[in-house]
Length: 619
Image (cartoon, rainbow, N blue to C red; front, side):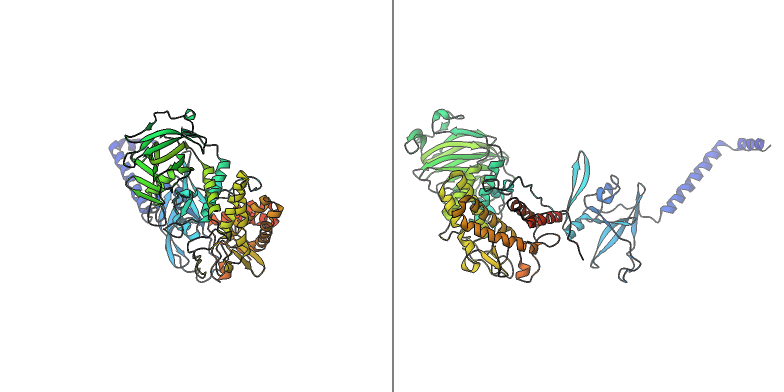
């Protein structure tokens, strides 16, 4: 009977009525759902510049993976025994967000009770903006893409340790200097056209020759020559016409009233090109057209004032720039699209080798400040070479590199500019820091002496020319004199000899410069032989004993210090930047291949671990 009644009731209910009932039920459901969620904010986290961004949440659930500035910091639960300060009422939590089943909350983070930043909370974990973490902890991170996916890469330090190839030897690669590019440094004004070596503006915009930089210039090119493949060389004009690979007899374009002819030079026992080209003309030119390489080299002898100019097509809207090498002593000048380098009188035969990329960039970036202005301009094509004046030219080539030319430019500069006391005086005032007396122009540096010795020893090994070895032997003299006697020696605690990169008063005990000086002394003692190298060996042995004893003073438990000013002046430690810390490691790696000393291996292991955040144990 009941089923019959229900069927009868359903029959009496109109289908339109059923639709209305369903609609009312749906409306009530929506209203109740909105009421339940009305107490929750639905804002996404804020912009990357201040914190977190919502668009990353849809990609990754964890905050450290959803944006480029989020790093997970675990907030420990308060202890029941927390101090009254720790039990203070926490700031209010706001802005709850539920995405893909995970609940995020914006939260104020009080930092050291003196600043508040915005963070984000997920359960028991708190996320702080990486832009804040990066500055606070001096750590490093970036978003990187791999196969179309993004990931956040975090590192405790920014500098890398190079792999020691093999036991160090004085004729081999110098540390990791094959990776050095001294000439492109912004504190290098240019490569001098007269001297062929870099001119530094590190401590003064006027520019000066800095022997450390010059030695590094030589050692870097020496090391590159050992580690890179031989360069491609294109020959455009040679001593004998039939040897030319890229030029013919009519390749020289000579204006009216000028001449370019073959001439037999007795001093060279070969033919050369003689040019007589009035300055008032556009010059006699040789087409080059090289689009691959930009190291130009030529042999030159001038009879009058003259110039050799190289016209470059550049990336600057394909504009033509001209680099002029002129027979004067002007360092560098730039006007419109013309760059000028003085190369001296050149009245005798000499080879000029120039890096056109460097010469172009240093000219366009020329400034009156310490730093060369950055520019993206690059040569696209070496168009032609132009000569003016009267003289002779030969062996015009363009090559990929010319490392040994740079190396011997540095080596020869060191021989020419060593003084009668065996040193390379540094002709600029240097103030190491508050509490140290200024070093007046003319001071010596143990690091300069050491790296110069390393350069000269290599030049001697290649050429067997004793002028290089004799110069290196003379360079040990300042190591025997105390700083106040115009030498580079300091004595720590009246016991340990130390060779000062900066011979300051009081002594500063810079670590990396000292070790570079030891490497130079090692190079010399190994090559000079037992008799000639006796003094270098004695200096090296005493320095090595000091290093073993004093290394612990440079260990902070999480990194290293640059010097010992905190001991000598009673000031805060001068912490080594990560690139100096890795230099310390690289130097110890080198020494550990030539000295079987457990102390070096122990410090190497510990100092490497600091790069990944390890710290010494606390009490």
